Image (cartoon, rainbow, N blue to C red; front, side, top):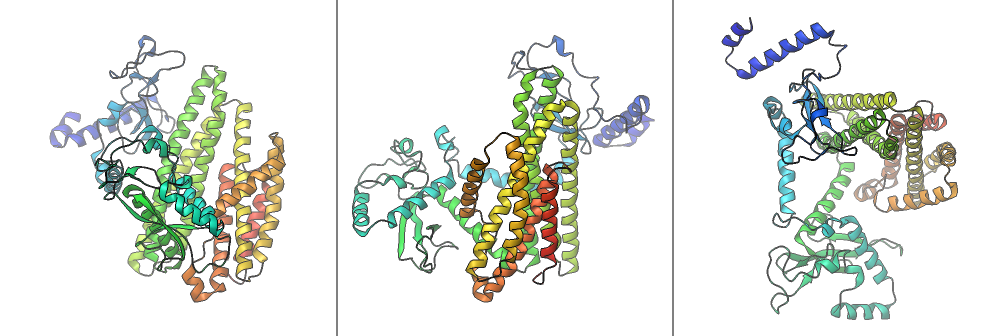
Length: 572
C-alpha cells in the first residue's frame, strides 16, 4: 500500500509526511497508547561513553566533569552545551513536526528541513526581523562592531546626567552662573561628559564619516549624550534642555527634547540650553519623544482600531520577552536536574538564578494578562471590527494558555526532580519577591493618588482605600523579610528609595494636559479610578501566578475587596 500511495502522490513533502504519520501510528501501537508516550524516542541516540569530544567539527571541545555531554534530540549525536542551544519542534519519533513539542537540537538539525509552510504563514515575524536588522545596521556605525567599553553605555543614565547637571547649573547664583558660562567656552563641564568620554575623546576622526578633525575647517566636537567624536555634518545642536514656562514650582524637574519634533516646546523657553548630539543618539531620542506623545494620545483617542493596534503591539513585545525568558527557565531547570541526577551539590548555586527566572516569567505572564483585560474592554463599532477584535482576542488567549501550560509543566518538573528543602528555598524566594513587588506597586499607587487628589482638589477615598490594603501587604511582607533574616527597617528605606526613583520617570497614572484643559478635575477623577482598578487587578494576577494558593491570603482578599468596592463606586 505504501508503494502504490507513493506512486500516486507527486509531492515528496506529502510522501514524507505520510510516512512519518504511519511510523508514529505503528510506534504508538507497539509501544502503547499515544497518551502514555509523552517522551521523545532515544533509540537513535549515539552511545555517549565512546564519545570524547563535541561532534561539532568547528568546536571539538573535550568533555570533562564540568563540560558534560548532551544529545541532539533529532540526530542523536553528542555535543557540548554551547553547541546545543537551538530549539525545534519534533514529534515522538524525532522528526520535524510543526505540531510537535520543542526540543534541543544542534545547529545542523536546526538549519536543515525548515518548515516552509510555517514560514509562509508567519511573514509578519519575518518582516519584523528584517526591520530590526536594518535598524541595527543603521545604528552600528557603518557595520563596524562597537567596542566593549561603548557597549556598557547606559542611554537613559546619560540623559539623566544631562538633566541633573542642567538643574544644578540653573540653581546656582547669578555670579556663579555667569562664571560657569565663561568657563564652558574654554572647556567642557563635567556634567556634559559621558561615562565613556575619555575613550571617545582619543579619536582623531569623525566616528561616522571618518573625516579628519582638529583643523580650522573641521573642529573636533563631541556628542553630549554618548561622547562620540563627530563633525558638523554628522551632528546637530537640536538637543534642548529646558524648564517649562508654564510651571511655577521651583523644584520642577528640567526636561530634555529634540526641537522641531512633536513633543518639544512650541516656543523657546526662557530657561533653556542647546547641546550637540550625534545622529544615532538623536534618532533614539526622537523615537522616545514620539512614543511618549503617542502614549499620551492613547489616553485621549476614542478610535477603537488604534487602541487595538497599540494593545496588540504591546502584547507582541511582551510575548517576545516571554518566549526568551521561558526558554532560559527551561535550561536552568534542566541544568538543576542534571546536577541532581549526578548527586552534585553544586546545583544549589543555581537556586537564586532559577528563582529569578521563575519570577521574570511570572512577571511577563501577568503583564500579558493585563493587556488581555484591556483588550476585552475595547468595544468594536462595526461588524468587521467585531470579527477582527474577536480573532485578535482569541489568538492572545490561546497564546497565554499555551505559555501558562508550559510554565506549569516546567514548575511541575522542578517539583518532581528537586529535593524538598531546595524546593522550599526556591518558593520562599519567589514568595518574597512577589509580596515585595506588590508592596512597591501599592505604595507608589498611594503616593500618586494622593498627589493627584491634592493637586486637583479631589476626595481622598481612593488613597484611604489603598492605605488599608497596604497595611495587609506590609504585614505579610514583614513576615517574609524577617523569616529570611533581613533587616526590616533597611528594607523600608530601600522601598522608599525605589518608589521615589520609579515616580521620576515611570508613573502609573499619567494625566493628559489637553484633557485637563478640556474637562478639568473630571478627567483626573475618571483616570485615577480607571488606572487604580487596572493596577490592583495586575497586582492580584502577579500574586496568583508567583505565589502558591495558601500564601498571602489576607493581601489577596484585601486587594479583591478593594477592586470590588471601586467597581461599584458611583464614579464607575
